[in-house]
Amino acid sequence: MVTCPVCDGTIDVDEEDVDEGDTISCDECGADLRVVGTDPLELESAEEEEEEEEEEDDAVVEEEEEESEEDWR
Image 1: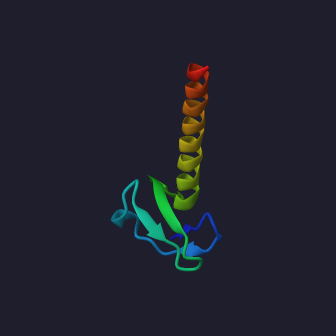
Image 2: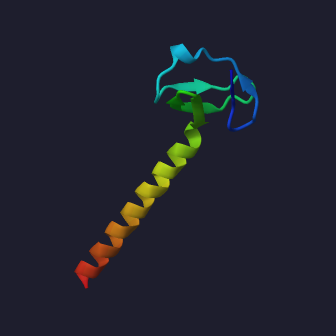
Image 3: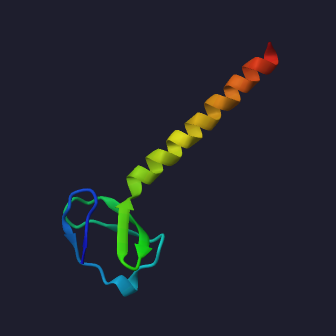
């Protein structure tokens, strides 16, 4: 048993059946969760991680655009 980090609901998961990096869903709220640790079992929202990656990608694109504008001048 582990607690969903999104809704605090209880998720029945056999810790021996999951590995770090696996994705599971919360039965109560339907959130996609990523296993970030197995001893003890630790979950994080997979959506939050995707949003962080998108923000990082956006920052890189903006930086590249600024460099291109400076080179053009």
